[in-house]
Length: 376
Image 1 (tube, helix red, strand yellow):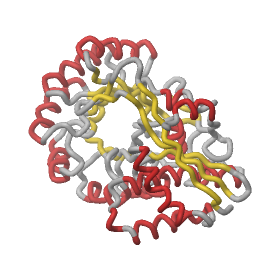
Image 2 (image 1 turned 90 degrees about the vertical axis):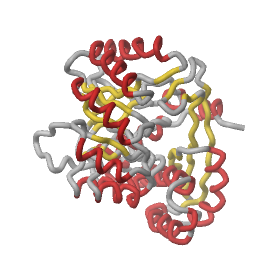
Image 3 (image 1 turned 135 degrees about the horizontal axis):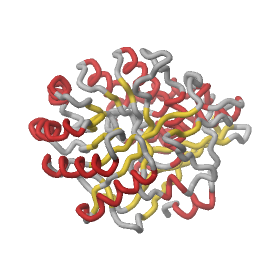
Image 4 (image 1 turned 90 degrees about the horizontal axis):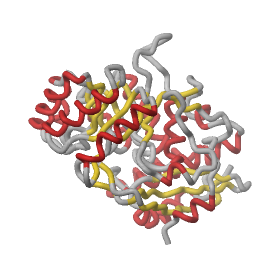
């Protein structure tokens, strides 16, 4: 079970249907890094490292120097050595992007080698399927015309929990949420995402306008660096506060959780440190009785990892009745890296995704599709 090789495959897919995104910027392409890890017996594991693919590639020689020759079950000790020795690099950036994807691939390979699904390796399976929310309602180059059709499509598809992008201005936020509530009806859960575009005063104004529409959470209302602002906002807000997609490792989440400055923590496994750090973040959240919902905005590999992760989490402090199940984000945007690079992409049915029970992540890569999207 010794690691023989690790390779990174940078991927990019242009958004031919038009740019879409958030309050700070629109995306014209989707990009990520596929991680391919090989054991000495030929077993391969697949992972996903988010961030800038070219930067991930620059880190690969350093990472391989530590990991080649290590037992795949010992990799978490190797990561700890790397963070300790290279503390000048910090934990907010490419080193953790790369470790995140390698950790996914290592768990995938270990599961295949042992004949066990990843959820059995990281805590055990407590659910046969996980609940999802549909992430859409994006800002576009012509949001005034494009927003309502996006919401109408959500309603027609029967999604019971959705998230929409806001954050242009408090007035715009109310307008978009009013449209969403009108089209989706009174019973659909609506979350909103500001993508850290507001200061505390603007976040308060927006939440005041939105509270009558029964919003389930306000995501990233403030910059991730504004811990004091989050603490004040969480104490004041009538709507739960969610954040964490831009935080790395349990250290970043601990500062937020210790101040009780959040209601729902949102680690991204392809960025925060993979399952290695995701499990520690989940433990911190459970100890402080906070909810968790992983951020997912990459390829089908990262989605599969999030499904295994959530399936492994205890429902504590709940027991037989779980009032608010842990949700996995399912992005509705055009995304060939999710829909084409897997031969068996995970798809929601009636608001749930079945948890794979095949060894590893339970996914099969379409290498022809990977080659089509690989950057030169």
